[in-house]
Length: 155
Image (cartoon, rainbow, N blue to C red; front, side, top):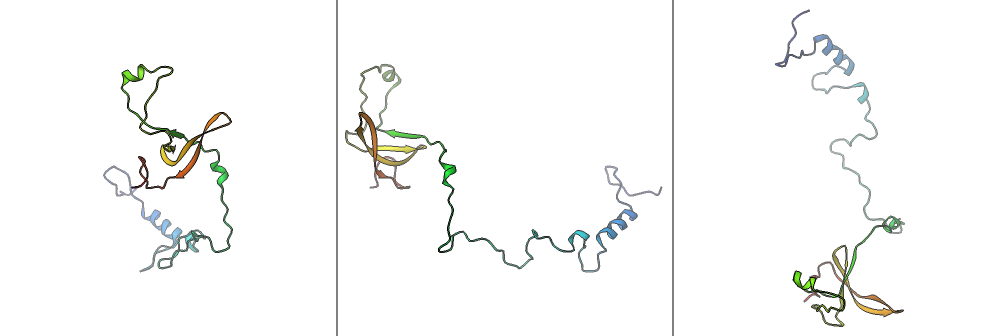
């Protein structure tokens, strides 16, 4: 067996016969041409567009009169954390430990001030407390804009 070139790790390179077989399998490269493999004779339908051809994308906005299907049903079972905040206060640990039935906690809002309604810890709306059928409830009176500060209305 003739000496064959090896790389530093000791692996041998391809023989001339192996190179010839590969060239026959994929076609010989002519001067200035790329190799043509049998599988690449015609580009597949999923092949990218040729260089210089503008890409085609579907419209993001529906055409006038085109019916758009919304699949909101999948959102109906998404759990949301809703919190109604009457007001806030700061208490020391000792004051919290002293709380008991009948204790009064003073909040930073006055009676009649709007409540803050949070959904997933984001201020969403303001409302007022109502009593209906002997139960407390909240009526939404104002939807909060996305840039409104959480502490109150815009100045």
